[in-house]
Image (cartoon, rainbow, N blue to C red; front, top):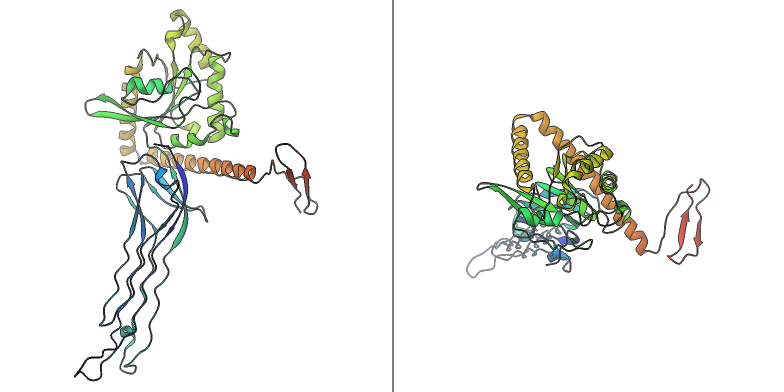
Length: 407
């Protein structure tokens, strides 16, 4: 199944049914009065988080969704039938955003959570509603109100306890295969992971956590190199980041340089995400001599000025992975206990989460704007002065460069 984590759709709630104008006309009954019924309410549009879904691919090609219209009122005081509500199922972890205002309508983070995204139109009133002692034969009705229409952007972020971060071929997918039942693709070339993968790690019989593997980053990812930073947003809801570093890279890149690249790209994407608790995991220790371990570890730690936990493992041989998983489980339990006991700590983390969310959304919006400019043929935009508005086209094989001069 194709992995889709962003879509734009349009939803339209059902219109309300019109009120009916009718008068009672029966044999042997004199002075029949008004008996026109009200219309039915239009159906609303809801979104429900479904734990059985892991992608938004259902909304990639079908983009318009309309709820049912309410039926018109009938004679003999018959009320019109209400329109069927429309329920759209989305993966857990989906954020619903109003495209016009960029307002976050809701965040579906729990299975079964239900969110109203478009309200159905109110029903129209039949002429029975308008009868009175002075108006015994009213010919007044009201039409149903139109249902709410909205352009929505759906963003899915995987929900995981632990996120893996590293260059391509650092061993992230191999680590997930070693500690869980997940089987992501593993090969001896870069970018074998093209979409996020999730694995459930069982530590004890009743203890487990979820780990997420995202496609690897390269230098310049924040500017669109490689697969860019599109998938970094999936780490924004993790509790702990594991920074994997290849201790014995096959190319000319040194391990300290590789570690610095990831820190730099992470900070460019979201300085607040870089503040998230992060452990350094040095992988492929079996590829270098044991007597060189300490020297290589010291070199990386000194370059990064690292003060947090450091683990030396071999994912493919499962050396050190068991201890790493137990320590992660212990960290997650201690974190949960502290959240329950310390309101200040809980507030501090909530503030950090919000800053990460805001920075990630700003970065992704900037990337969307850049893609829109490229599609329109604009190479770059510059402010170059305080003169009148003017524009200059420069011939270029990549497209015209338009320079805007601001008043």
